[in-house]
Image (cartoon, rainbow, N blue to C red; front, side, top):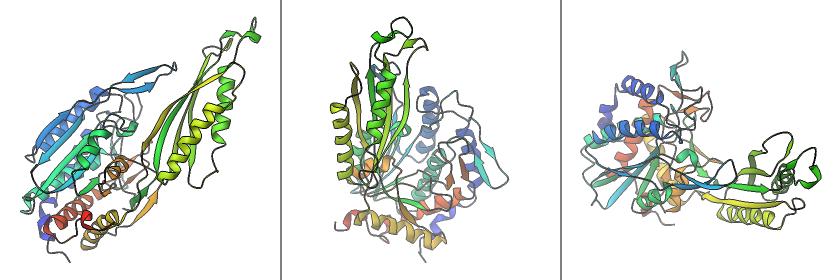
Length: 409
């Protein structure tokens, strides 16, 4: 049993306050495209982490390229990055990361948090990941009171576009990660507390299919149907499924046309890919490009590809396994079983790993059904996950745990 357990006393009795705060935060819509709502959560988070005495830096993100519903390339503005820093000259540094945005747009019907009789809080962002942000802040408050924080640098980085692939924020986050020794991201754990281990990588692509508009009755033969061309694109891309184990292509969205009596001039196919290894990611990216470049999608039909791999695969390295073992050791001291398993999901932890940072990225509250109107967080997990995080930090700071970057590859 760790001698550090007595340092966790400040966490006792914080559940109800965390619950009250999480309800208030959940009731503020912060969909990735709702900059005003994201700003409100950014203000609240700034207040929360500033209370710890951390230096605050706000980084405005650059607009990112996107293909609009008209098939034209434009840009979209995302919210800010918040970077909170303690002890910038410390030689040992821990990075804790999270996101301010949710998947629910401002006009979504899912807007309010509700406490259920089964001990869960049902609401947007309760698990993914406003609950995780509060666990992070509370654990750091405990850590700062412990007397063990003086030699450990802390970097807290919160972005506003994780739910839309972190295109605007990942370069900055990776820059910070490259200078740190251990990383934690506060995505939700599974309902039973299990963590995500190795993660698949991911890419998003848009295919703009162009034909020729014409009157569907008077001059049908003069038209070139872009939707029919898009259907051929879908068939060709979908045929890549099954060619490599654990590589998947999901045709997620398809749109086109203007009216029933018009041969459609344009259609857009949007897809997401997942793969478990760098080699498989390179293969699927190349296969998509070759499919579009060499494909025959109909007479006078053109297809233009946009997109790329945006999340690298996150393998289970010896350094990452060491950090998982630190978390498991903390769980053992607390009577909280800690298990992990590989997953096809991805998050900012993938990008931090690309920067060389061993990162456990499901340190948030226990919960389920994220990205749906059934999303919930387990209320009793608030203190549990706060203790787990704080004790993991204390084990590293005290020398009770091995720093993962000290493990040989």
